[in-house]
Amino acid sequence: MKKKRVIVGLSGGVDSSVAAHLLIQQDYEVIGLFMKNWHDESVTLSNQCPWLEDSNDAMLVAEKLGIPFQTVDLSAEYKERIVDYMFDEYAAGRTPNPDVLCNREIKFDVFLKIALSLGADYVATGHYCQKETLSTENGSVYRLMSGADGNKDQSYFLCQLTQEQLAKTLFPIGHLQKAEVREIARKLNLVTAEKKDSQGLCFIGKVSLPDFLQQQLQPKTGDIIEIPEYFYASRAPAQSLIAQSKKTTYQTSDGKIVGTHQGAHFFTIGQRKGLAVGGTPEPLFVIDTDVTKNVVYVGQGKDHPGLYRKALKVKTDEVHWVREDLRHIEGTEMKVMARIRYRQPLQKARLILQADGLYVQFDQPQSAITSGQFVAWYEDEELLGSGVIA
Image 1 (cartoon, helix red, strand yellow):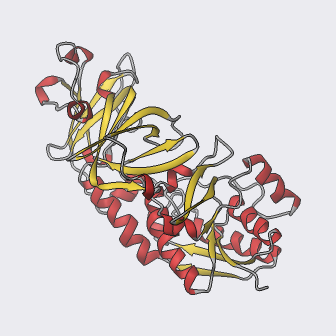
Image 2 (image 1 turned 90 degrees about the horizontal axis):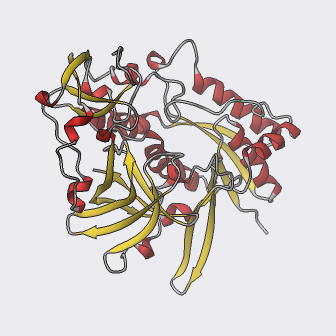
């Protein structure tokens, strides 16, 4: 019987290297493909050339494993779908998540289509997550499950995947702990065995985000205004769901000017570093930005009330269900566990469907809910859906 063909996204890291090995062990026909998504050396730090080093490591792994290998240049698609989108979002005062976008737009769309055109039955990646298949009278339903290693679980980054994409995807290392993956790589004497996990923007490497953004977003001097805690003392707690999901609106007169910045679009809610304002009893955190007025609002301490909200909204056209069969929430509410950033412990919440969008209301107020980021909701270990925070 002819072997099933799997094209592995070999990134030059240990995870995808071991994923390829495990697929060979499972008697698949395995091909390694390296995605070259960025080669603008002007925005990388120091003298590093990450894609070249990663490509070479991926080639050495393929050679060691005895599998075919090739490189595919997706830099045009990456610039259009990820980089340009990021610039637009930051310019509008939102904070996009390039890793989620990269998986949705590049790995599991452009890359998947290339793999299928090469006769692949599946694509595989080194993500720490798992896939399960449910058989129903209407056909197979694919479940996106958390990785067995709770410290490395990457299901959040895959929160925008579809049933069609999951049907064609394998996650060979999702059932393993990171330490086990490294041990397998050591036993195979792979060049990636001790290689550190990649940092920085997806596929670009170690990039200074402000330097990257300044390629198109021009510096523009504005005020940093500190909002004192007593500002909130006279304000009644938000009762309605809509009010709970909205950010507090600030005026210049609500606080005092404590410094200047070079562009509100370079800052994000919850940010502590990069403000260059000292002399306060507690560290300053960004609690809001206004790109129209070019103002950055800050507050002292990680418990500052300006950092917290109890609910968020996802616009109707930004709601995505991995489990399409659960899209219609019974009644108008659904109890879930949710997170608003990678590695955040799951939080108890309710999905509340209203005419103007989907609201996620948390049992406990959440710090630094940020427009443009993704909220993902789970039931037990299964990721059910996600959406862009309005």
